[in-house]
Image 1 (cartoon, helix red, strand yellow):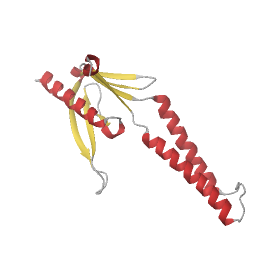
Image 2 (cartoon, one colour):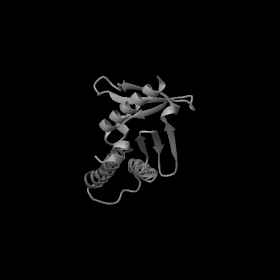
Image 3 (cartoon, one colour):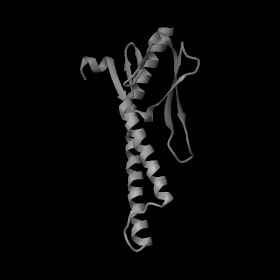
Length: 160
């Protein structure tokens, strides 16, 4: 790593969920159209009066809209030696080390069979509610966890 990477690291929002869901909805829409048109009515013709097809098309349009919205928004977290920045294409909010009271790490278990999701809660002086960061929502989540732990140790050293 060069000197700039050691002082500042950017973690982009993970869009793989949106890509996967859009692809799956598109495949389901195509398969339903082929099966409904081919096997049920003995001929392949365009089914325009099927409400399930409309429902699947609406879900696909919403999924594509969410994907495009998040692509345009381009959210990321930037952690540096001075503090942390929450940013997207349109705005950014930065918090210096002296503005952060504490960072608390936890695990959220959603169901009994799923692995725990790591989270961090940042208590900031200017905000009543803590900021919640889910590490699984960002690319390179292990590195993000490591940087957050380094930031926590800096906050604890500066408060003592």
